[in-house]
Image (cartoon, rainbow, N blue to C red; front, top):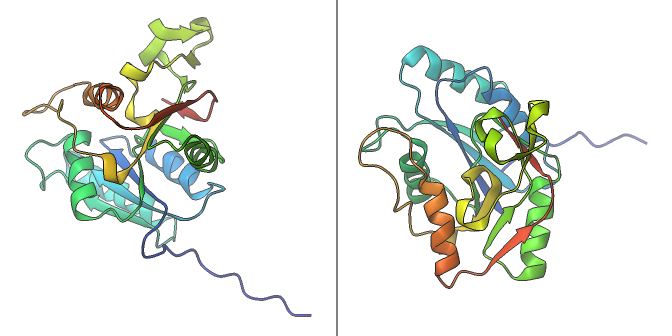
Length: 219
């Protein structure tokens, strides 16, 4: 009996999830994030790399990381010149408004590793709780969150995420409830627009729910 040839992955006209990966000057890290998405048990998705690299050489490395996947569900977009401010929040908004087709949005950074069942379990939890905004309470994080870690002396630890301070790497939301990152800066610089978004979700009429699992590593 002859085996059927394996079909290549394709993105459906309206995939369940759009991953928007923010990439900025860390081309060594980006492939790990992308391969963790490619390896998800939930396969109905598209992935758009929003590239804010500040030079062409790094942007080409980001683009090559996407090409190396040989998967039409992954795209590379140089967003740096398309937005007023070159940062992940402006880039994510631009992609959502112009390119994203998914019913759910996930916003990993280029230094994020998603466990293989991240999407499957988040979506299942959202369906069970009838939620529109789901966040993972226990990400594994590096030194950037050392003050909030459990077992920080180990280098990497578990971060107890609170709903009003939820980083964008640890949540997913229905595209229909997203109204923008109102806390984003009007000039380049660090801000907590993702924390502001989660606070808005709490204050609004959005149905939210927490999944108390460890499903991702951030930096």
